Amino acid sequence: MSGEASAPPVASPRAPRPATQRSSGAVTKKGDRGAKEKPATVLPPVGEEEPKNPEEYQCTGVLEVDFAELCTRWGYTDFPKVVTRPRPHPTFVPSSSTSEKPTVDNQRLSVSCSLNSLESKYVFFRPTIQVELEPEDKSVREIYIRGWKVEERILGIFSKCLPSLSQLQAINLWKVGLTDKTLTTFIALLPLCSSTLRKVSLEGNPLPERSYHKLLAVDSTIAHLSLRNNNIDDHGAQLLGQALSTLHSCNRTLVSLNLGFNHIGDEGAGYIADGLRLNRSLLWLSLAHNRIQDKGALKLAEVLRPFELTHTEVVERRRLLLEKGSQERSRSPSTSRHGDSKTEREKNQLMGVGSFALVEKDKTQTAKTPKSLGKKKEKSGEVVKKEEKSGSGQSPTQGTPKKEDSTKTGKGKVTIPEQKISKGKGTKTGSKEKRSILLESELVGEATEMVNPLLEPVEHRDGKVFMPGNKVLLHLNLLRNRITEVGLEAFLTVVQYQAQFSKSKSASKGPVGLLWLALAKNCFSPQCPAYTMIQELMLPRDPISKAKHKEEEAVASST
Image (cartoon, rainbow, N blue to C red):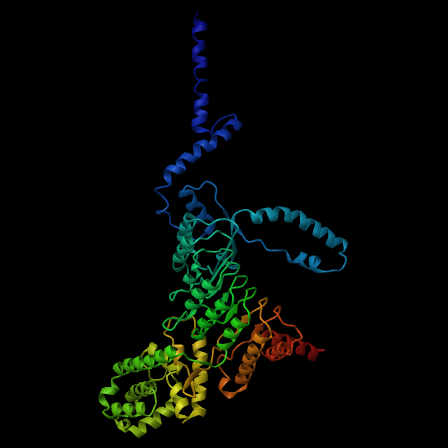
């Protein structure tokens, strides 16, 4: 009986063993059962911690660690991994591109490449966050996301981990299912990122409300923007053109804009051309693979050569001149001391000389007064002579107390319109005009105040005011549109004008217009005389062809 009574205590420790396996799932001799039961015990604590921890986490600057940790704290159990962007091996490029029969070694390499490519293709299309790293410190330089939907919560995670990437330069989102709402969230996180972020590519993401123009806000820091394959139509092009420039606002940071593979027609091209009228920062524009015909081509060509200002633009130009003049007079202490400056200003205004030249005069007086130690400049005749000399020869930053004023004086555009009217010292002031335009193109990306393009030098003909046209745009791509010889003739006129302008003395420095113009695959014959002449005129302007020609000459001279 005593042996039978002792049997239950032997079986009792075995009874709770299944329960301990379910609760711990870690220490057990039955590995299979433990492995199956482990996820059930791990996931609930993660869900319990989710509301508490995301805000408390401090990012380390390592995207792989930060993104995984934040996803876990937000309750994600399956999320994309951060991987280095795959690059094709250079060894296999020649064998795939050559038409000759591959050798035995190349065949072996291609077989091994094809075997490896099976896995690499699978990995490539699996949802991932691909990154390119800096070679020195392995910090993230570019981010590529393609083929999986980026939701609002993922953007919330990005808003926490991307600001810690100090070397981030570019974000590329390809077919990630953006909506107008998520685009707004994405735009809001851009200012949080490093100041090195200058390139954004959002391709294959059509938006119902066409709100891509919000990326070109006045306070935007994006320099390179690609919006290919987004079904952008004429209305979307209108919004983008208005974001490039209007009468009262202008984007000053965007350098390149890619609008290829969209649905932009003549009307949309006209809106883009309107945006180029007063934009002086965009250097590179692609409208390839759109629906632009001759009407749109004529609009684009019009703004690249001297064009007539509209009545509204002329009125705005006069208002800017008067407003700028009054501001500078209020800043300058010399105007209160010189009794004859006001009467002289009124006389010059009656003679047709704008008040903007007089503002420059007041600036020069203010700058020179501390150095002269006398009041000999109060004589109006001496003031005019000395200011003309300073306008042509003196350094624009000399004697100016403030950086802002020196920047404006350095641009020198305040004196250009009046000197063209008076035709007094055209030879010397031409060099200043060249310097001013060059400085403006160099200061595109800076935060300093820029001179409004309406204050550029103008030409008066038959009671109309003409601007010299946009010579800042260097690259224009119009491949595969619907342009005929009619539009081609308009671009031939542009190229002839810009080529003549670049040869003149007044254009030895500063922007000189298009250096690369692509018009192939349109509705005209490649042997068309106008097209042939455009190619001949553009060939010496193309910097790439120049470099190749120099290399060929160097090789020929060495041999």
